[in-house]
Length: 168
Image (cartoon, rainbow, N blue to C red; front, side, top):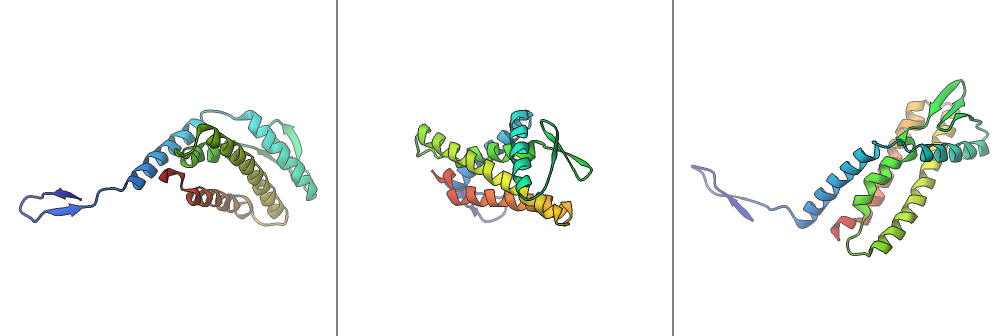
C-alpha cells in the first residue's frame, strides 16, 4: 500500500494496482493499437474470401446473392459491400495481444493463432449467414445483422476473457 499525504488531514492509504491489472491494461492498449493499425489496411483478399463463403453458405438456405465485384453483392434490390468489420479482421487483430500467452513458446502461440484464425473465420461466416437468414425471414436489419453482430463480438470477448492469457 502506498501512502498519500494530504495537507491538514490524516494519511490516506491507496491500493496499488495489481500486476494482473497492469498486464491487462498493457494488453488492452496493445489491442487498441492493433485494431487501429488493422483499419489502415483494406483486406481486399479477406473481403472477397468472406463474401464468397457467405454467398455459398447463404445459397444452402435458398438465399441467392449476386456477386457484383470482389467485395460487393446484390440482394433484394440492394447492394451490400463487405467492409473490414464484415471480415472480423478487426476482431482478430485486437484479440492477438489478449490471447498471446507469454508462458508458451512462439511456436505454440502461433499454432494456437492458426487454430483461432480458422475458428474465428468459420464463426464469422456463420454469423453473417445467420443474420442473412434472419433478415430474409423479415426481421429488421438492425436486429438481424447489427444486434446479432454485437452478440457475436460479445461471444468472442467471453472466449478471450475465459482464456485470460494476460495473467501469464
